[in-house]
Each structure stands twice: as C-alpha cells, then as structure tokens.
Amino acid sequence: MPLFVVDENSCTRCGACVAACPARIIELRDGVPSPVEGAEKACIDCGHCVAICPPGALSHRSMTPEDCPPLRKEWLLDPERAEHFLRARRSIRAYTGKTVAREVLARLIEVASHAPTGHNSQTVSWRIVYATEDVRKLAGLVIDWMRHTIREAPELARGMNLDRVVAAWEKGIDRICRSAPHIIIAHSQNDRFAANSCPIALSYLELAAPSFGVGTCWGGYFTAAARSWPPLQQALGLPEGHICFGALMVGYPRYEYHRLPLRNRPRISWY
Ligand SMILES: Cc1cc2nc3c(=O)[nH]c(=O)nc-3n(C[C@H](O)[C@H](O)[C@H](O)COP(=O)(O)O)c2cc1C
Figure 1: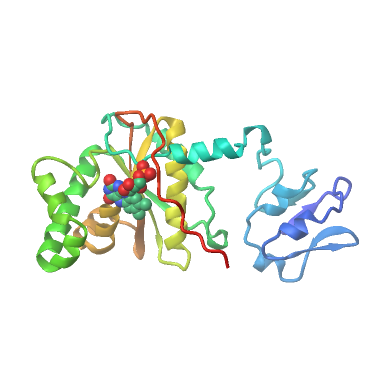
Figure 2: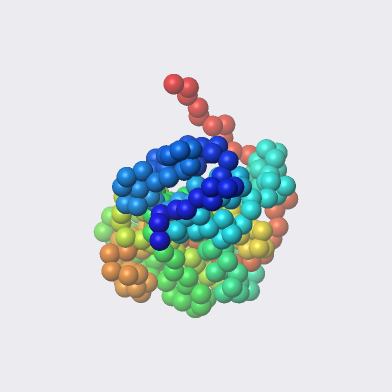
C-alpha cells in the first residue's frame, strides 16, 4: 500500500497537509499532495495529514479519515473552563478503598495514549497493579528501600523525610501509596524520549481520571524506589531494559474538594 492516497476529486489543493506535516514529506505535485522521495522512511505516522484535511480526501496507510473521529468544536473548552478544568485537578490522598473496574482503568489508559510522545514514538507501556494486597506488598518494598537509604545515605534520607514516612508506616499509615487500591505505572525502554513521554502520558491520565469519578496521586517515593531498589524491580517484573518513569495511585476519592487552592505566581522572564 502507498504511504497515502488522495481523492483528487475532493482534495481542495489547500496545502494544509503540506504545512502540517512534521517531517515535511508531502509536496504538491500538479496541485495534488504527493509523497516526496524517501517519505516512507521519514513518515512518523502522526496522522496530521489525515486530521487536517477539511474534506477528508487524504487516506494514510496507518489511518483513514473514517478511522479518525471528527473533532467536535462544541466540546472544546473556552479559556475560563480550561483554566477551571486544570485548576480543579487535585492529588488525592484519601480513597474509599472501593476498587475501580478494570474497564475504567483500561479506558483511562486509552485516553492517556493520546498524549504527545517524542517523534510520535508511542513507546509508553503501562503496568497496572490491580490487586490492593499487591499495592500494599509493593509499598512495603518501598519502605524497605527507605530503611536501607536511612542506613546507607542518611543525608539523602533526611532530605526526603524518609524517617517520618517509615515511622508512619510502622503505625499503620501508608504514606507511600496512601492506601489507594491500585497503582498505574508508565514504563519504557530508556530511549531518548521516554523520560518525558511517560510523565506526560501519566499527566493525561491524571487529568482524565476525575471525569470518570476516579482520583489519582503521583507516587514519587514509589517511582524513586522503582528506579533503584532491586527487590521492588524484581517484584514489578517490568520487561528487560524497561524503567519505571512514573507511577500514579488510583482509586475513588473519599472526599470532594470545594475550592481551587492558590499557587505561587509564575516566574516569567521575557527574552
Ligand atoms: C513528580 C511528583 C511526585 C509526587 N510524589 C508524591 C508522593 O510520593 N506522595 C504524595 O502524596 N504526593 C506526591 N505528589 C503530589 C504533590 O505533592 C502535589 O502535586 C502538590 O502537593 C500539589 O497538589 P495538587 O496536585 O493537588 O495541586 C507528587 C507530585 C509530583 C508531580
């Protein structure tokens, strides 16, 4: 199959596909969008050419206009709603304990899969720790890492308040996973984009979750331990060469929020 085909009858020759293509592999030949030499290799399958074409005249080998849902402008947020939507997101640290259906978690990951990835590489993989007892077990391994760090690198441990987290654990308070029923981990080979792509995808998931009634919180301690503590790495069993680039606790929030808290004014400099 060719890289893309254009319905010459409906193509308006507007050139939008040429301008939008990140790899610059489309040119107008006799007014019709055509692949430049070497296009097959350079194409990153981002679908911009299909998505930007007003009449849906361009069909890419990886997606046709029929595959791609229409963009519903009436569903887009105006600036006030966008600000409110973003400011209403909260880190949730008190959960009901009720499990979230697997389908809901899978759907959230589907949504998060539309986050940008470097070069459209889409290399983010997901591990869902579904059983709550497994979340507890893994949190316990994070505590082992903290005890080890307190012993071996006390200054680092002090900087992260690890002694307080361990003391809480010993009193039955889970400050690692906040007693959330599930954890979702974004992992990948350590390619040149993964350290950005994984957290961005997790941010998408975090932003989408409240619309499903689901709350999340970043597992910073969990991620730090997963990056460096072999017993946790073994327990997680990520594929060979994969790194945990971020983790979210996931569950149903026990409480609702009623206000948007304040944040520092942004530090901006104009160059
Ligand atoms: C990289 C990162 C790591 C975090 N790690 C933790 C964590 O281990 N435990 C926790 O309770 N919150 C964690 N948080 C949540 C922050 O504390 C939270 O974002 C901040 O207090 C602001 O609150 P908000 O998210 O509700 O706006 C983390 C957030 C980020 C971005």
